[in-house]
Image (tube, rainbow, N blue to C red):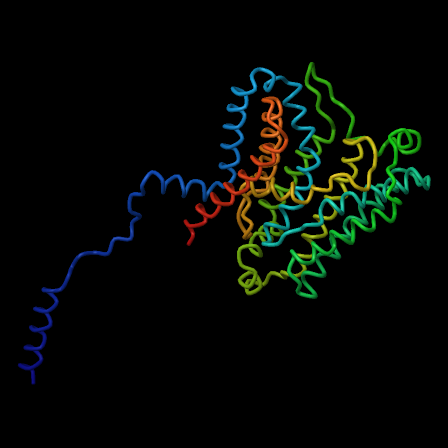
Length: 358
């Protein structure tokens, strides 16, 4: 019995000696230069819009000449993108959750009409008119959020419907009539606060431009430094996994839409100062322009990836392109043409970067 055990042990040792003794290597293999670029951009999604913005500024500076780099023109770009930039901030919150909001501009115009009617036509104190406008903006976002979470409708369909509803309401409340600048000055001049110029030599900023930057900085802090912000990203990345982790996804989504509506109300106040009047048909293309800024800014339409600051750079990129092409004498038609290609290229880059995690 002992001899048989010894023999089997010897056979086992002989078989073991003949086996492969190489150690598995789990170390990362050396990546090709293009792969390293891909991984860097995946880890830092804001780099893409920053690089595009820098290249655009240099390119249009060479094409349009010294006029492009004048302080007046550069600050004018900031003024021109301020409203779309604020709308893009609201849009970014929704897109990070893998949704979309086609109603942001309609909410903004509706709230501007409400503020104008209360403050100018009805003589309500301006501060109270603003507060009621902010409440109405949050309520509009609440409606979108409840339709998405409680009735389980796709965000695209919900906000496409509310876009038309809000637009019809603002035409009804305004009687399709604008509120003139003179009337605002006479009855509720504080509504135009964010249109106030800050003159620094030949540069002309407005409080609205500074407001846009402030909103993005606040949202960046909230999304990156708070638990609520991490929950927003988790929902966009994988809603079911977020629910399994104990996150109340529906409540967070409703909050996201409410915050987006509130930001649209802030944009409404800023738009009155920017335009100088209140028109029920202003910023009609603001919905698509806000999505354009978000996409060009590197925030993924599939949700869960991208920095809120990217939307700010995206808005600036659109402004730089429009200003540069205009100074170069390019027709408006081709400005739209160039913006269309920007969107396609931005989405293509996003798809390429996302392959890292595939």
